[in-house]
Length: 364
Image (cartoon, rainbow, N blue to C red):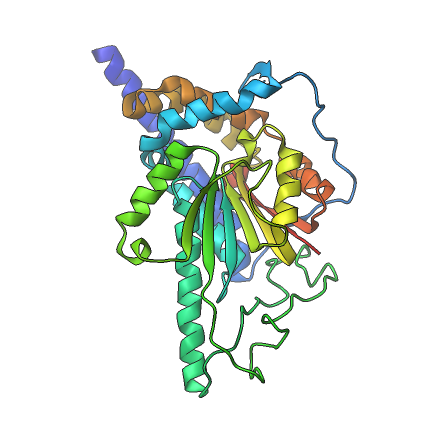
């Protein structure tokens, strides 16, 4: 008993120290919003080497037959689906909420937006996006009412600098500004006003158990339960069940490292986006802050599987999740994969000392 208590206290102390260091890293890297230095980096144009299409592939630190990984990953997420959101809070000390908020802030949702969230299972990101789209639509209607218009018309687009701050923005990259409105009319003072078409958000996930959790959460949430613009679709990121040029934006949060064929998933993201569409990927990455890596490794391997055992009665699944993070490409290598898929104006932003990175690209 005393040994378990000492181990628990040591784990708690390590977790507390890591969260303190990670928050310090996040604060320092958020300085761009205060007009200070930016954490956005422009990716070099050199091509990244894609993984060999061999018979085996990584499943955590193990090598498994390529055609077996999807099933193994499915078993992991079916096992943890009911405790997934609780575990996210416990493992990250609640910081995953800040990372996801930053993702939505970078996306800059706009009225009428058609958005796809892949590997979105429990809806954590999709719900944030939908609420932001609805808030933008309310503002749009209020502005139209003040100006004596029905609406600004169609599905308005965000401004051309929506890639975010720094040299990787679409404007800085010489990108063509994204068209305003369904008929090309600009938002301010549109000549032919028409009723605003409400936006929609689609949650796509390959795992039916994760989708079931998301549907239950939405049904139990007053502002989401009756929203016809929210839908859940079972589908594979490598072969999305959607037509070409269907969405204004695409997000995938903490999901792409579990995909067997990442280049194929990135090409699919490009295919389903409309011209000018935005790709955003939030994923665990390689720690860049000095002194944080050792703490992070100790916490990941000593504490996270233990939490998984206590909360989800499944240490093995969380051992895989920890190992999968270490096997995922670093920030530059993944950014090159995004470019190789055909995206342009590719950038990435480190958060919490590189524990997490937010990659961005445009279909131009």
